Image: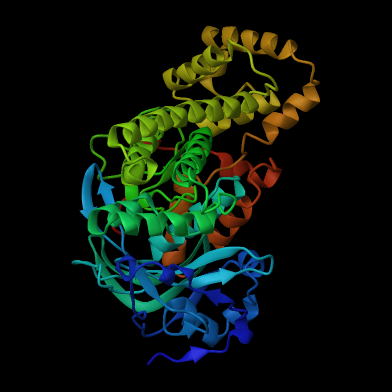
Length: 492
């Protein structure tokens, strides 16, 4: 039996509400021990917010928990069961290399899942080894923390611990690692698909009620419209989330239904990346040959995934199936409207527009067309507009852009805010830095060779993306080579 440690050493305050669901939703099991656990990186600020003692986490006992060799007091490790439409095909899945240790109750009363990713085989592993390589776990740490700093809802990374193992992948033999992931929950669209496919209406209802209590407690369980409101709230969060992705040029890469969290957080950083050159059809994932999850498809896929979600709720929406379908279709249209409203509002802020005018959509679309035509850098174009530094990119000297710029300035003149207020709005909505792919790869390569200083400097720069400080300038530079040649990989 794995030895437990005293929670007072580290500050564990774990509950296990997920086990209140029917047994079919999970399998309890212990992590697979690793030979030589070593802490590679720890998120001190996140540890503090969770009510954990970072110094104690860095101790031998703390690292043993982060690597999966010990269970914290109050923890009940389990692997969650779920399904997923993977590139359009439904498959029964589950945590094949992750375990939920429990739910940490923070000093201010919030509840967060503590999950180990790469902790070994589970009953849902199928042919996988259940392990993870160091590089991809560090990559998730970097990207998820950058997303958090950008103000985008996301799971977060508490730590990465090396395991002392060597694991086999297509790229060869790689050092193993375990990521400690923090999430509002790991409830997914795929969890509801699993309940509907492998369970009963009662199971779907139990899951829906649990979700309401955990994420939408303002909706009472005695509310006759609670399941409709559940979908409305989840859809609204997705509309906001995906708009935020689009506004910073983030491409998730694998928007399967098992990677869509009901909480509205970004989850599962596999083949994700940020655009350098703007192109709406940008794809980075090596397995997305048809561009299903390309940048411009993300809002549509969000709606497709929500359609799969609401299908599971149909029996709870109305006793008459035709009426339930009509309700669902109306709600999906609302999602589309909400996304476009969120995105256009965000784009207006990026252009310093405080109010809404009819011509704004054309103004936005015309700028993006110019950026695509001239292969302009997405992030740097908006940063240049923010500070009026229009002497760098080729696009700025073209007649098309000059005409657009005149229209933009005329539009700005019709609002009451000062130039300083306009710039402040733009500054707070146009980041100076994103986790550029070449910078991430350089950090991972150095870490693989034992040098974590490159990664630490990158994290420090990304921690305040709207600072627009001189120290960030070199990290804002795009890569020398074409960003279209960059490829990311799943199954890491």
